[in-house]
Amino acid sequence: MHTLLLSASDPITPPTAANLIMNGQLVAIPTETVYGLGANGLDEEAVARIFEAKGRPQDNPLILHISGPEQMELFCHHIPQKAYDLAEKFWPGPLTIVLPARDIVPKRTTGGLSTVAVRCPDNAVTREIIRLSGVPIAAPSANISGKPSTTTAEHVLHDHDGKIAAVVDGGPCRVGVESTIVDLTEKRPRLLRPGGIGPEELIAVLGDLVVDKAVTAQIDKDEVVKAPGMKYRHYAPSEPVVIVSGSREAAARYIHAHFEPGDRVLCFEEELPLYAGCDPLSYGQEADVNTLSAGLFAALRELDDPKIHQVYARCPVGGGVAYAVQNRLKKAAAFHIVDAEAEL
Ligand code: AMP
Ligand code: MG
Image 1 (cartoon, rainbow, N blue to C red):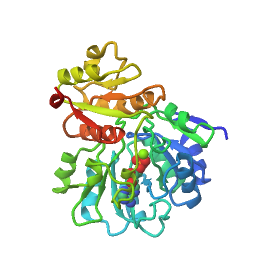
Image 2: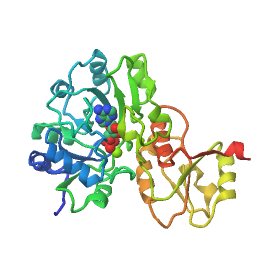
Image 3: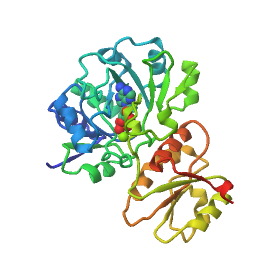
Image 4: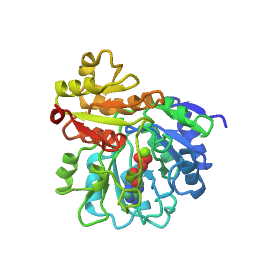
């Protein structure tokens, strides 16, 4: 199959992409979070192609991308006022809401669950593609399952060239980490995955938030969890990653004491001079956490190289989107963290 590369700024792109979606094809779409591998979310066969292309476990549900909050009611029922409040405040934007699913949503899309995740992305071209196709677009991140997510059209082509119908190139993703996921199907709202909307911002609207265990700890693969996707190895380059926490100086001392040829250092731009001779790679500035979220997956993909033995990674502290960066790095490191201050 020849994979079309469609420019988001070309007026022919939305109708072309929408036609492919209506025909059951796979189209990678840009969003403000990451690139998604999209298909008609109401068509079981189209959705099956997403799982096949990604090598994604069948029980890992997909997010339905909708063109506006009014579409929530088409695919969800028993929608609490809190869902409307969140949609009003954060849509279009990097927030996914889990609600009871209507029967029209195939079980293949929901990974067999009776709930469905919905989101309205902050990308006008992608919303136009959804609107023109007349169906919600089911789209997980467009990476091969388990690998770092895709934040450019080049990343998508690297993983899927020749296997999907088209990629819509909308440039690098602004946020760079996947959406925040909130489950509103229980008494208390539950954070299933941190993302572009920080927990503090959610609490300001919801007044309450339980953080799911899958956010903070490694989940056993046989455990039953609310967000099935969270139990799988995720975001990881091929070699082991270890997070080195603590002050800049303590971390540099620890890393220099343990660094061996073939290792790499993933750090903040401000730290590059500390690791001269260790082939450091920066993923953004510690002083501007948005650059870290935007740069994280491109850096992890660059480090996905069998010649590398081990990666020592530096991780930002704090809330907001830094909380999501911590979560992705911890997952990439399988929660392997050393405290450089304690090791001295
Ligand atoms: P991805 O789009 O690749 O980031 O994956 C989508 C994420 O949304 C996965 O981690 C899923 O587990 C989660 N998700 C999707 N639908 C649901 C749902 N109905 N309940 C809980 N989590 C969901
Ligand atoms: Mg993913």
